[in-house]
Image (cartoon, each protein chain N blue to C red):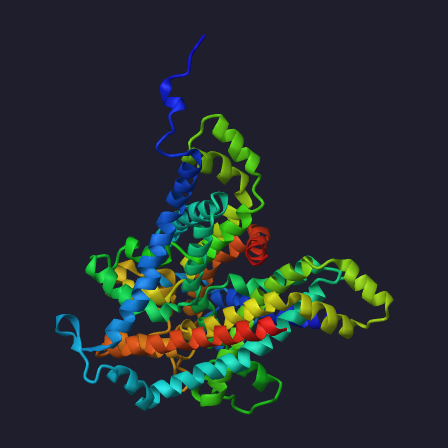
Length: 304
Length: 261
């Protein structure tokens, strides 16, 4: 008969439990280190850069140390890009979320015919790259573009409106573009959420005499509220970082009236005479905006 | 309801229809507002090839996106698996810290990332391109959440069979979680293919490293724009993601849905 060797009876250096836990750590270590190294560390580093002036090897602490941050409040161009970005946020995000809610609850009706076609059509813009769609909209709204041809054709304008060359219509085009590109995405998220809601709740509500609008307000909205919160945070975050559209749809023009914060930071940091430390201070401001708005949204969302 | 959905569908699809049509029209036909396919596709294509280095940009974009997708899906899948299958209090705490990184806007880290990449001599390289998005809390979360529904008995029996932990991950976990991997691949590939801000920082100094979004952005940079060429370039940049979207629509939707449960 085989006698187990003495090693097995001795307590091993690593118990099975500990060994398992260690292999778990091994599995996640690469990803965790990368996030710390490439997200958290640069965040801190960016703050430190913002406390300096000069470039390259000649970087010195600025005097006073908060100089770059103080400059934020005196820079009319920065203020302009902040208010433009917030304008996009305040106008586009609510319209998009309401539209997406309506579309998703329609697509979720069991009686709807041709569901697959509608769904594919509405999701399709999500598959288009940001630069590509920015160019498509730029062409559509160009002075000699399609929109003007159509509007002249049906007699709205005599000569066409120069959409991208006047402040408010250029901003409007960016908002229309954003709505086109992102509404489908929010609809996907809501539809996924709606499919997790038991249909019998709606049946019961119908029997109790609740109309379609009551069902929407009393069932759909409350049950979807975690996802509504998620989309609100995601789209706020995304809009505050808007870059591709500002860069390619309008180029920030006319003047700087459609330029977003990210675009201005990019310009300050990498175009003309680069000023990395001031750009870093602006970057930090975006971070504060995102963090504060996310906190507010989470607070409001929790109360409901 | 049908009217509303039809209008929404029309508005969603129309700009793309117009892109396809315009890619086949000459600049002057586009200005006239033509809504029908024309005969200028080959001329536009010829001009595009003549003016811009299309094949290089396509190759760069493909290489960058494929390398990033493969590397980042494996790294994040391992992490998600590690967090959930070897679940512990300390790991949960670490996960919630990592999740905070989703709150950090890219604009807030791009300058330090640029310096870091430059200091390592990785500007204008694929490695430099993939670094910032190699590991994302979003993908880790996606894998962690879907590992919850993984049948753990399979892991236990594989251990009894003597498989080591790494083989269990590649030979048991990966095949079982195919749909999560597909979703992660679609999401990562699309965002890698379309990314623009980071490439225009990291590939700034080297036209031979330009990607598709950078190339099509250049088609409008000059004084005279050939509308047909712009539309064709936008179309070519969009085709790969549209194809992926159509073939993997199910996974795309499921993948996003899976991450919000």
